[in-house]
Length: 320
Ligand code: ADP
Ligand code: TRP
Image (tube, rainbow, N blue to C red):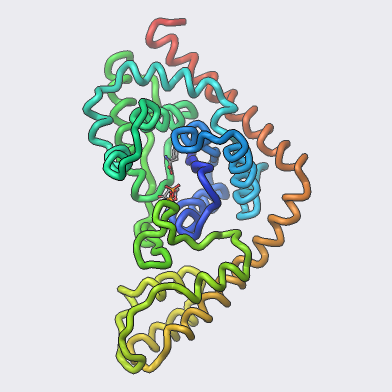
């Protein structure tokens, strides 16, 4: 099965990105034909600094490789290295009803936050549809917030197929519900936009400091507390073993513990998990040729598929 997902290089990856998205990509590479790309064209809707985007793409590649994405198993590439996708984007645009895009929550949210919308931001879901359809993707692992975009993609594929004949493979979203919302340091959803992130590859000392500053409530120590509604417990659960989790859960239910103690346990568990990744990333960062080769090999493989799909699409709509 062809599995595809993209991630925007708009900043360093945080725990939410990893547990909500990247972790699933990496697991799926073992059993499926994984296509994973760094969505630099999408990032252009928010980053207009050439040096920043260049650095972010490189960081994203290093992060993904350090997290275990294996370029010999999966196809890892940069979105803009496949020009066929941009052509497909245009063709899909000619069949996209405006109302479909007007209903998209991501666009509406940004507009509501006062971010001036340009056509790129508005048509963002169509580019995403092109990303998916260009590789005959069958399964698209994403976070909950991207589900609506997959629906847009399915709508566009369905109406193209209905009008021009069977051309596109119909993709499905794959969403992992229980990790759908990783909370940030303030208890809201962890997000770059809220400034409440804990970075995957953040300096270990800085990270520990941030963990110790996680917001908690002021209830007395001796009170019993519900672990299932507590963001500190949710964060700890991401890294803890089953026994560790049960032990802390029992503490919550019984009361008589300090949040400082849980924070220390969280920082320790995060270190155990992150230290080997940090080491792997440092090794990769010193081997630029390896990273360049991995992305190049990925682009070649992806481009071959995208070319075939675009030929099919061009023929179907009469421009070939
Ligand atoms: P951000 O909100 O920080 O800008 P992105 O929108 O770039 O993050 O998210 C990239 C991917 O990571 C998406 O698939 C998204 O669903 C997932 N993701 C982001 N934040 C979280 C979170 N707090 N919990 C679970 N998944 C998340
Ligand atoms: N929009 C996605 C995000 O912000 C990234 C993305 C772009 C993507 N194209 C895609 C995800 C295609 C899955 C499939 O997270």
